[in-house]
Length: 249
Image 1 (cartoon, rainbow, N blue to C red):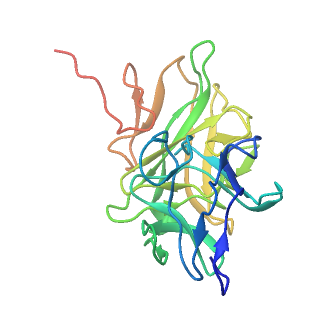
Image 2 (cartoon, one colour):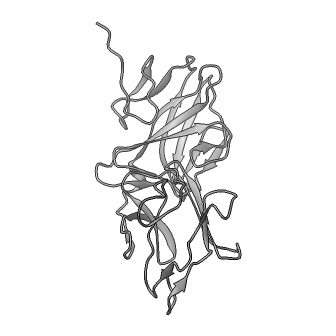
């Protein structure tokens, strides 16, 4: 509550979809001046405290706040999230936080986008499957923010606009299926061979890789993760996880 006096939320509501009355604050729900109100986004509606009955997706979601007359008072759209980090406002800017429920927000330390690598890609999926590529964060200590970065091929370019993050030594799989969403790209990959490029929000080239004709349902990528050597992963496709090669004895 940013106001100088207490605020009564009776009849206000929260939602993550088109139903503005998905969770309605009960009568006499108060927030003191300068205070905080903790609301759990889970299904434990019989537990003490306020529980919405719906959860937020770590793959990206929306959250809306409405007043008692169903006027939208605030909203947040976010993308890919990482374990044990929250999203929060600091100086009116949404960013990755250390979780501080019921207290002042504290920004999380971020690593440079230069830690990101194009780590694995599948340009010739089995029938019914999607093209995809994977980003890897080489940093061992801090997450990397994806918002504003560009991913491209030799003839297509897509900007990642959502508030998305990759954990330290973590992975982000992006579907190249021309569909909307935080983990989707507005182009497809070319099975006959192409180039993949990753740029900063200032159009500085961060990483690039070229590949030739691709075998169906077989990915290629870097081994070890984030390194320079390109390997073919026959039978060991691993989106969102460490790259490896099957050994037969």
